Image (cartoon, rainbow, N blue to C red; front, side, top):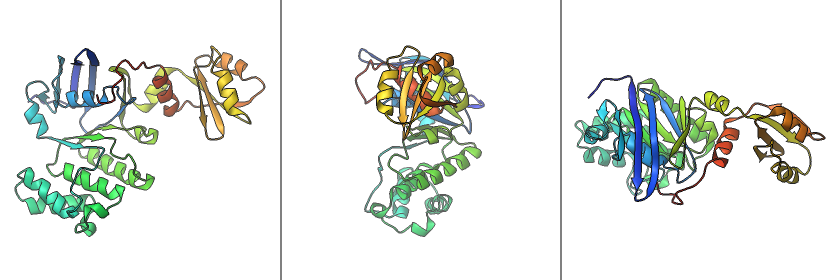
Length: 307
């Protein structure tokens, strides 16, 4: 094990499945206690990349360390210090919250099982519902149970695969408060999400599209790196206007947001010329504007959503 300020530090990772080059020359660093958001279209290699970053899948080439362990030769040691939470709830519906946690603790062969489960119930605010059957829980409470199960072994790294899909906004907010509390204690978090408000709560983002890492850094730095100018247009007939503007060379993209149209491009003068006669104003380019722009300029060369 090599001591390091980075929970993850990898260089030039590549992975092939048959003739598909699923992840291409991926290099990335994640600090300890940092929350990294993984973004990208379905089938872009996000899951494969995350598994390689954490030593759960051996790269075909490239090197790196996770939690100080070599990702190619010390994967068993890495697994003991990683908690994994899937998008789909995968615990036992006919067991109570406490029974679920106790069962997981037994599988892990944890000493002082009762005390560890009681601590997990307390830390995730589950004590008052400990005897409630999992099948009767709402999405938000199921999410807390899953996170509590992940934390039983006090992992140094959490892998979260779209954990808040289908969960109401209030429960999502509470979940993120828990994640930042864990990060403040030195736990590193890798989370895949399609929610832009969640992405903005990450310390750092990585955007991967069809195997290529196109952008990484803070939300602010990624927005600035794309050098997009965005205008908000209001009025009638926005759908028709969107189709007309999409044919203009100066317009990179048009996206309807409610009762307004966002128009983005690289040349503000050319955009304003194209918008003459319309009711428009310049606005700050959002992470969602950039996310849509990156998706538009990505090419699906896989045709398989399973990687």
